[in-house]
Image (spheres, rainbow, N blue to C red):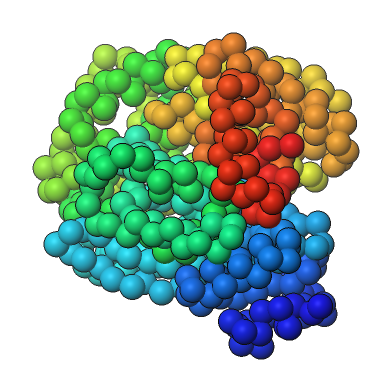
Length: 460
């Protein structure tokens, strides 16, 4: 039976794409030249339509993959060719901004940057921020429990979701759309869907926590030569800024050189003389006073030799310049023949030695051409980008093992914020116990007994 026949009772013809209509569709924004392989793609416009779609898929035993902004890095939106792809792009309404409750109610397909803009118009802030904000949709952000540049101050996505609506495998609508922060009435069901990568349900709406918009923003690049000083400086600056520190990004020397050598738009704020470059950001309430405090803290750090060099942003445009350096990872990827990405998590004191060891080991692997490290060191999250001469599975596995094999013994994780998907599921056992994985699978089996939702993702 054709998809147009299966879903005609709940969708208009223009909401159902199949066969040749899928030619211009794709599974990831980095693979736009590869046509989507699927039974069909449907475009629901509300939760009821998602529910009706899932009822049909449940009755017909049709596998389902959800597509949002298609920016994930672990294969969560990949398809085999026989799935129903549910795109959330038309679930794109910002339903309400409640300035008194400091919340925003959105459909799953709303782009993160649009949430930022809507909140800003009300002098509010949605704190979640990362490089793909111009394409990432909030449903995907929630389903992967995304992190980003301000986790240190505001927490992961999980901490920012107050209410959630989702559709389960059999089409049941589970809704807990509340604006309250405290709700200790037994199990918090919405937490099951946050970070589950679409394997337990399809997120359709959410209520997000907003903050009062900061009145000041300051940033600086810092140069250091010793990782122990990076940790000491983190403690020092966080203590002295008394809650204002919102970002603490670490970039290794060779990564900084490549990130700042591509164009004048990302010219280097500091010379290429140091082993580590730290980008810090503070958000506060009074620009002039906060700037003076920020500068004084840096001056004292220089006087005591805690840091070697520092340059403060002198304007909002310079703050944007500093963060453009950190966020535009295409300045690394564009110069790779083939690329492989990692986002590991490990205890902060162990980062320096662990990354140094990986640099040495990776450079000994035949086929590895570039190794770049950077990340949100204040929350223990480091990203690796590896340039390769080929895309063979054998080279990929060698690199995987090099990055992951030491994490279990130090209590690290193979995924700090990108999820597991298909690319990391063989390594889930390195950061979760057999008992944890068994319980996860039991939950999956109970909520999705026919394994229809994102099958093959997270678990083998």
